Structure formats: C-alpha cells, structure tokens
Image (tube, rainbow, N blue to C red; front, side, top):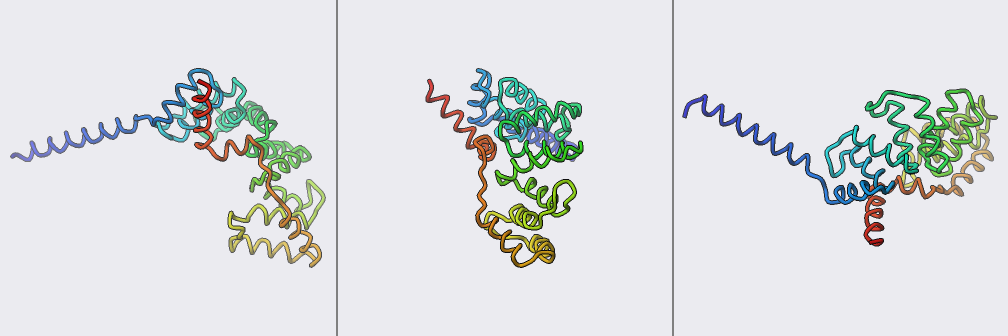
Length: 246
C-alpha cells in the first residue's frame, strides 16, 4: 500500500467524518419539530420559543438570522418576551442586525410594561443614560421587586451615593445584600467585604433595620418573568396545551 493511497484514504475518512458531523448538527429534536409546526400555524408563544431555540442552538443548529425572524413574527403577534429579544438584537447584543437604539428602547419598553424584569432593568438603564433619573429608579424598583440582582445592585449604589436619589444607608445595605445573596442564602467573600464596608458607616440600629428588610423581603416575579425563567419547561407547556386543544 503506497503512502499516497494511505494519505488519500485518510482524507476520505476525514471528509466523511466532517460530513457526518454536519448531518448530525442539522438534526432537529422532536420538541423543535413540534414547536416549528405550531409556530407556522401562527401561535405567538411557539414563535417565541422557536426563536429561542434558533438563538441558543437548542434542538437545532444555531441560527441568529432565523431567530430574529421568528422573534419578529412573535412580537408582531403580541408576544412581549419576543419584543425583548428584538430589543436585545437592535442593541447589538447578537450582531445580526444594524444597531438601532430607538427600536431597541421601544421593544424593551413593550416587554417592561408587560412585567418582564430583565426588560424593566434595561429600560431603567436607558433612562439613567438619558439623565431621566426618576424614571430609572422607577423601573429599577419594579425589576428589583421581582428579585433581579442587577436592578437591586443599581438601587443599592444609588441609595449609597445619594446623587440621583436621597441617600439612604439602610436601603443601600439591604439592596446590596439582596443583590448578592445566592440561592443558599450565602454571600461570597467579596460580597461580605463590600457589605462590611457599608456597615462601617452605619449605626447598629441602622444595620438592624437593614437586616430586617432583608429577612422580611420576598421576591415577587410576574407570570411573564416566570415564563422566561423556566425556559424549555414553558416551551413544553405550549406544546402540551396545543395537544389538549385538538
């Protein structure tokens, strides 16, 4: 067997392997196929989930262009979570479309009005950048009430700094702790250090009040935020509900 033959044989095997991998990458999961069928029938929730599947490469090959297309259809049909994703696309997050700050703000505001915490925090950031601080605080508070850490962190800094809202050490401490506590109720060493720094400028009574706020506090996510959080579980719900209607 010549070296040339061996080399050519290896090349053929490599080409076949690459081709097989490409075929495998194009395979669509059963959930995706069902979702695609439902989306093509005009179901807004299915269109959104199909967009997420393309966006994240779940059950299908990742394709930002197709994701954007399905998000657009879902948003046009009134699906607020799809509106938020369009807002992210127009902000340049995924690089598929030309950045358009006005469209990004518009779509995110739709989702924020519908109660989505991520959108509310983003809208707050947009208003902050524009210098509309009262609006920024309003939207951050709405997102924070749902337990969204970035919004809690923004409020903590705002109350600590005291420039765009009156300084409040108690709330600065409470929001900081709520923003940094993990699912087990613990703080990282870095967060503990930050909390300690805040505590140094507070009286014992102020710290006690802040800790009371933390202990009594309970996140209240909206149904829309919950839908977004559970992701694929919600996608399966959409499929099951469609089957039950048949």
